[in-house]
Length: 174
Image (cartoon, rainbow, N blue to C red):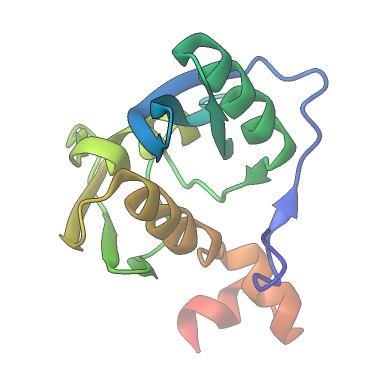
């Protein structure tokens, strides 16, 4: 799922204290000749609130099973996100489908300035101070994936220095 991100570090769910957060539940209807068949799809974000997060989608005929399936799916897609003093290392834009998300680092004490699905993802990661703007589609599925797109592109100074083969001081001072 995260193959296109070269710095995405996949994490195993064992030994982590994961909390799951429900982003949304949709009732979907399939019309057959025998009438309407109702089902549910749930999107869930799980995270340990330190720097590991994952998202999953579950579908079923009833809500509880859909949520349980979504949690299982989310645990299979855990990634580590670089966090710097409770915020993100740098500004980043992410997009998926029609949804665009812009996340910006903020000073300590700012809080999570984000709405809806973006807030759920950022809180699950464990980011405490961040500004964000969601534009375009407000479809929770696409907004969650756009937020993940932005988070997976984040790089901390250590990884940049290692990638370029230079010292940390040189990254900041040129």
